[in-house]
Image (cartoon, rainbow, N blue to C red; front, side):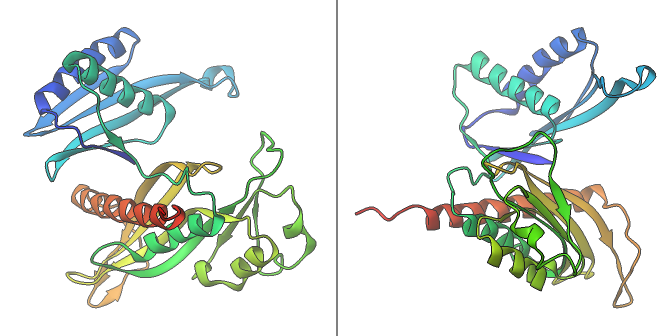
Length: 291
């Protein structure tokens, strides 16, 4: 999921009118659109098709679906949607419809590190996020993806997975390597990560998968995933509540289950709140003080 905060005062009826207009346009193109409303909250589910010419003839048409949710929180609307290009375009079409029909300009706020150029600060954002989920304690970090800008980016994803024996060889110093993926336990504190950064300070974190545990309540462990879709600019922030490891009789289960809708809702709000604060803190650090 990805989220946009709308700080401009708008009414749910204005949103519903705009969504209904977009629904008509989408259905003309063959999409199936379902709108649901619960008080001040409103959502639409879009079922659509895309053609993938890389597939065989019988598999080229891909049937997909996505969701856009308008949730009113603390007097403002948070818009959550599936992170993909098509659903992002539908969301923007709804925004434009609201603006045109009501002669207003929507103030949109997203989590972005576009103006933060220091690699260490970009990595610090994820470190703070891992430790910054309210009411949760860090349980483990199992995946970490680092990236650096290179003079010439190839069209192919140059991601490389490293084992314990890979770090320290000359490959890491190869200026052509853009991405490295670390997987294991406690990878944010691993010697492998330290070795990567020591060889090139240009690397910075663009994605992490980690687990947090409830400090109060039942003590369940939640597996979370956060990343920037645009690694070069650190834009397109999105997240996912991957699953839950239930705590039973004081022991955390090794079996992961799917999160319930209420758990997704709660963790989504916590991730959004934490990521917003972490980004603001990084912006403050990266902005020179006024003289």
